[in-house]
Length: 215
Length: 278
Image 1 (tube, rainbow over the protein chains, first blue to last red):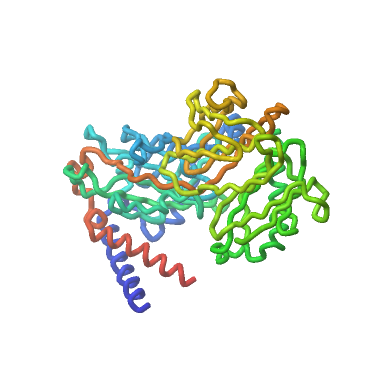
Image 2: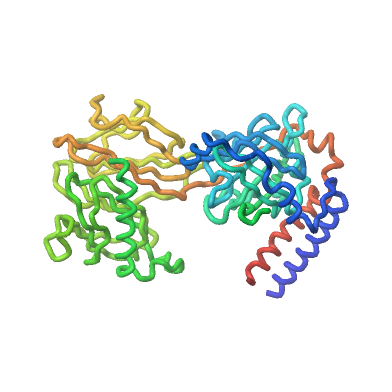
C-alpha cells in the first residue's frame, strides 16, 4: 500500500512537472487552468450545424457515421471515412494524410457506449504532414467536434493523452461497451526507418460533453 | 413474420427474467457469474405455440415458432426442460421433455425442433463464443429441420457440405453481407433461400434451418452473439518521418521523449488510484 501511494505521488509530481513544462513550451496561447469552461462556451456548438429535415429522417435508422472531425484549438479539421482492417489485421488508415478513418466495426462517435476510434496519418510517404499531426498540441479540455451524417454534431472534451509503443496500444481504446469516449490515434516518435518508421502511437481520449449542460 | 420477431423476443425475455427470479435468485449479482451459464432457447416446431418450463418453473410463455431468445443467465446445474403446448403446463403431459446439464461458464442454446423424419425433439447446442480476429465474424449453421442432408452456399459457393439434422457446422469468415442459400446435399436443388445474411464483425451469427420439407414450411431463423471482437493488431499511421525531420523542434521533449511517456502514464495511474478511493 505504502509503495502504491509513493508511486502515485511520484507519478503526480512527474505529471505536474511535465504539464508545467508543456505549458511553457506550448504554442497555443490558451489559459490552461480555465480551459474546460472556456472551451465549452467558445466552441460548444457551431452555428448552422443543425441538420436539414431530410437528413434528420435518416437518423431514424440509428446510423450516423462521422463525416468530419474538428479540434479548433489546434487547427485540426479532417474529413472522415469508415475503415476496417487490412488482411494482416492492422487497422486501415486512409492513405491521404488529410483524411481521418473511423473504425466502423466499433461504436460510432455519439454512441451511448464504448470507444469510437478515429485515426489519421502523422505524415505521408510523400512528405506531407498529416491533419492528425496537430494532436501533439492538444491540451486537457480542448473541444473535439465530430460532425455526423444525419445527426447533430457531438462535442467532446480532451481528458487524456498518452504515448505508447505500437505493440502496447491499450485494448480499452477499442472497447465496445462501457462509458462513451472518443479515441483519436496517430503515430508518434521515435522514428526508426529500420523498424518500419514510427514505433509509437499517440492516443488522445475525449469524453462527450452533455449537450444539456452546454450554454 | 419478421416484423413480429422483436416483439416476440421482448415478450419472452420478460417472462424469462421473471421466472429466473425464482429459479436462480443469485443471477443478478456479478459475483455469481462464475457459477452461471448463458442459455438461449430456439423454437423450430411449426404451428405450435409453447410454454417452456425448467425444473417446474415457467421459463418462457407463448413462445412462437421461428423465434430465438437472447441469452439468459441461468445458474449452472441440471435442468428438466419441459415444453408444453401454450397453457397446458406444468401439470399436464409435456409435448417434449429433456434433462439438460449446463456447466459453469457454458453458453448453450436449447432447440425445440423436428428430427429429420419429423418427430419433435429437444437438442442442446454448445455455442462457440470465443474471440475472432478483427474484421471477421463466426458463421454457424444448425440443421434442425425435417429435411435430408444439405449444403449451405454463400455467393453460390458451398461453405458447409453434408450437414444433417441435428448437427451444426461453423466457420470464421470475413464480416459482411453474403447471399446464402441451402441446397439438398450434392445438388443444385435449392431448399431454402437465397437470403441476405449479415455476418456481423466480432460477433457470432447462427442460422437455423427449421420446419419441414414435406410440409413445405422450411424457414430460417437467426441468432446473434456479440462480444467476440478483438482489437486491430496495430495502427500504422505514419509515413516518411516528415513530422520529425522537418519540424523536429515541435516535438517538445515534454511528451516526445521517454520522460514524457512516463509522466503521461503516471498521471493516468494516479487518476485511477484517486478514483478508486471514491
